[in-house]
Structures are given as C-alpha cells and as structure tokens.
Length: 130
Image 1 (cartoon, rainbow, N blue to C red):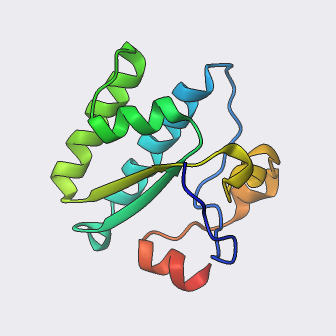
Image 2: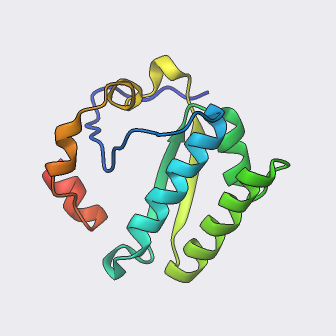
Image 3: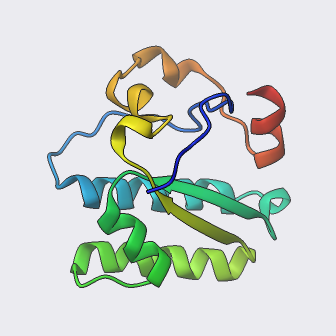
C-alpha cells in the first residue's frame, strides 16, 4: 500500500450509480474499463501516461498483470489491453487502503446532479479545470 498525499487535488472524472450488486473487485474493474474507454476516445489523450489508484487489491493486480482468473475481470483486462494498445496509453497502478483513497468518499456519496455536469474530454482539460 502507498501513501497518497492528500494535498493533491482529486476530482471525479465520471460518476454513476450501480444498478446491480457485484463484488467490489469486479465493480472497480468495470469502472476502470469505462474510464479507459472514455479517455481513449479522444486523440488528445493518446500516448498519455496515467497513474491509477485502486483500493481493491484484486483489481489492481489483475490490470497490472493484464489478466485475471476471474472470467468477468479477465474480459475487462482484455478490453483495457486492446484500448491501451490502440491509443498508445500506459497506465501505472498502485494499491491504497480505502481510508487513504482520495476518491473513496465521492464514490460513496452519489450526487444525481453530476449528470448535468459537462465532463472534460481530455486529461489536460481535467487537470486544468479540476
């Protein structure tokens, strides 16, 4: 586990409420797949190097290795692999405890007004606008 400096600014990029109940490792994996899909659609994000923090050790390990013994998580790993190769994106992974995860609280408090928000389309735009 790593220590994340809490003075760094973190803000949600995407947010939605899950309609189904699944194991947390799978939900974290599906969330990561969705984020990579979202980022890889814009060519300005291609060739990006990104740092991804997980608080589910199984998801962190699966995406770091690029495979999982879970069929559903392995499918997500394959999707991410294909998108990152196509977009020439590289992800670096780290595991943190839930209490040290800077985005843990926003993930537990679902704000329905977030749908009205216009999401940034590039990593740079997200960094600049916070």
